[in-house]
Image 1 (cartoon, rainbow, N blue to C red):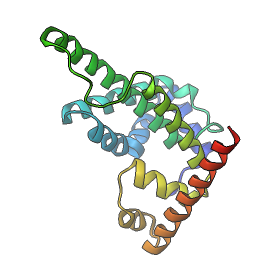
Image 2 (image 1 turned 60 degrees about the vertical axis):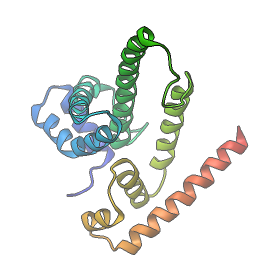
Image 3 (image 1 turned 30 degrees about the vertical axis):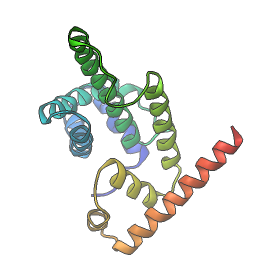
Length: 189
């Protein structure tokens, strides 16, 4: 499968905004398993994960006209929307649980995340994805597939038809670059 360019991604999202059913199917084919893996790892049950995937793609369809390839790659945009949706859903689920806990007696949150920290985590995640988008193409692909897609380096190498050693080197270089950019940004702030 050839890698889609940002212009191709933009055209795909414009077709989705125009309610092109084939384009919606194409978007799902490209990102459905990625969103599902993320949801399956995040949500409390398989049925919740399946619901999240459906809701995320409805949200992508409704917001397709807002996609701007100059701001982020399509995979980054899809994953940000998916992550935000999952955070919102978990908050709603947590508030339902808290309401029932109030009737039984209060206990501290299991996650240990204080109010306001989730927003900071969301912002840091978005900043990290922006830094990933600035990496060379192979490094971007390896980082996104390994860390967002949950693929092994061997799977990535097989799918891209690239030797495993090259994939490992790309990952190593990408992580070094991300660390360097992160410390440079911390020093300048």
